[in-house]
Amino acid sequence: MFQVRIHGRGGQGVVTAAELIAQAAFDEGRHAQAFPSFGSERTGAPVVAFARISDSEIRVREPIMAPDAIIVQDETLLGAIDVFNGLSPTGYVLINSTKELSEFGLKDAGMPLDRFMTVPATQLALEHLGRPVPNAVLLGAFAALTKVVSIDAVNKAITDRFSAKLASGNCAAASAAFAFVESKLKESVRA
Image (cartoon, rainbow, N blue to C red):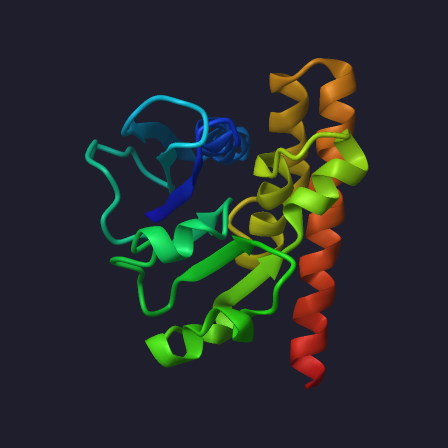
């Protein structure tokens, strides 16, 4: 089973992101589930959502304490809460940021930096949607980094969820993030 924990703030589409990951996996013939965990339910408050993907039935229903992947939709959460708590030593991390990983001081925390990546998701969302909503963008990046779901499945889930206009922009942003991560991965192999 592959488990994903998504951290963000209210209004960033954290819950929708988890649902889209689950839908993409389901569309590819796997079992999936998605569910949120709310604190105070207001715009800007920290929100966590979870997604599980498996080739067999998923019977567990509790929050994910040992994720295989973490998506951070708002970099300001890095200093506010322990978003990396329970992360598998072979886990993946995507952070919505224009900063480089070295600027976060993660090297000192013993994190596996070869599986961590920053993606300018908000900027890509603004470019393709005209709105600073990074959720679908980060799903394209997630598809490229983990290979757990395909970009085609992500785009289909987006198309099935949103109106044609919103889907078009979100799919373009997700595809741009997918290409961005693919490019960074190729660079790291050459280095």
